[in-house]
Length: 268
Image (cartoon, rainbow, N blue to C red):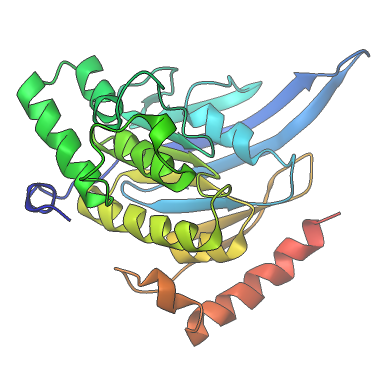
């Protein structure tokens, strides 16, 4: 990791809250509505890394999108730093499975974009973008376009773009799911190393229980649809974590078995 990134002062992210939220979506071609999320409450402390796991369609991404202001709850409140969540919040980053890079901009120019939108001076923005691309192993690819990069490299650029502005909250919707196993483990480790510096509050949606244990401080297990939180687990593995070594850790194996015993009951 570059010295410029390491030297920045560690910060804590936002406090996040879902307060008794529920979500109904109109049913297609019929009267009534689909209950996507039963009344649910959730509290994330500043700088906490929390994973949401559960069956497909259980409301995990709906809850994530509420924090991003992309979904307005049918009832209840969503708060970021004590204020209502809103779309386009400048201190909220969103990392998805698809990299969504702009194909006409180089890797460096893609990463600079959020800094440009925040009005960061050009020289500072250029240096910060170069630093974080170097930190994710792409220091030699600053001038490469997305079409010239592998899938894993493009996702590294997406990680850099998400974190370069030091957002107080990072929302992650299965960002490593489309990667091969080796690239996935490496990128998990790189993300955690960068996160350790700034400690944004992270909401992390994944179907992969092993990934959730590796990455998170706490895991919330959702029921099958209509979703609600049915269990909560504290992941008391020490940080910083060595991703490649964790799966042989007896505590990791114990946590996996305990959480899986609940998770499997919701798979229908």
